[in-house]
Length: 359
Image (cartoon, rainbow, N blue to C red; front, side, top):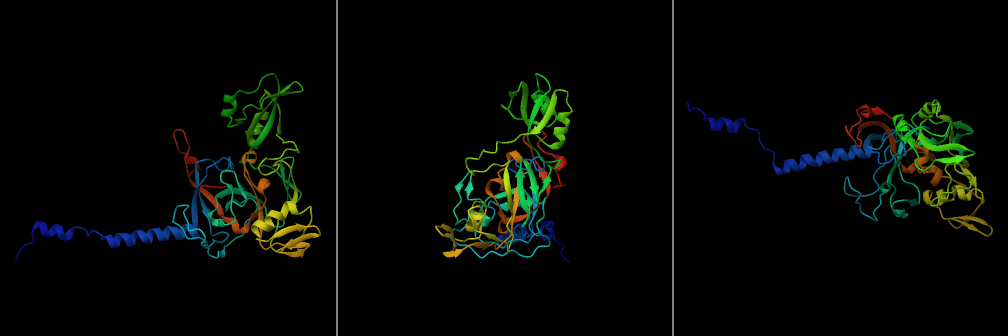
């Protein structure tokens, strides 16, 4: 009986290399699985700005669930993992069933709803919702709630809502003497000094900081500090781009599906853009009143739910105080937890923020 040579044995035992067709099919299935997961289950996002500090930090990577409120079917055809899509082709979008409803306090990702973008200018109405930039904020008011910001304090249905431990805002500090805590002291307390904010009022030295409620309590305990008060914009101040004052927002009812409002000179500034931009109606004011889609109207009934969203870093966030309501159709998903976190200086990672639930 003939014996196999070593070469024959090695040839038979060696693993077979996949063909080009098999490799192509493998990667096609892998990409399809990733796209399905991103579209219908969950998607990772990176925090690029400070608007949600100290809840979320620049460099945090988080998982956003699309199943809680129901994923949206794709409305455009584009190149995966890029901003490139086929313009002029828009599919009817449907939101699939979810297992919960948005709640006050949820941290959410949504597509930018306003008509003005600081970086890109006016957003044309032809840009599909899903192709607008994703924003992350906290839902502070639900459909049917009455929301207001009175002297910087958020009020929901007439009840003041204090800052949570991880939220921060701008404060005016009054020094007890002729000097204030230096920048190193404030940095050691994780308090951000507002440069150029030092003033003398009625003989007292005052300076501004950005801090959380807990950091404010530590600041008030210093012998060099007499008192700490919220920094308030003057009621007449208005943002040049949006014409809004974030510290003073008059009470308004957040629209709910089926809610009817009167069309008046008083309601038009609050709801007019929502009716035209998000409800897709042609609302016009005439000499005798109002028309909706060319027909005389004295009231309007909303077709979908809306929300109010604010950043946790109240004085460093452009949100519903500036551009109004977030439509239900713009909601992407609920932020669940951070799974990675990177920073700019050594050791470059924040291990304590890995797999951390979002409060």
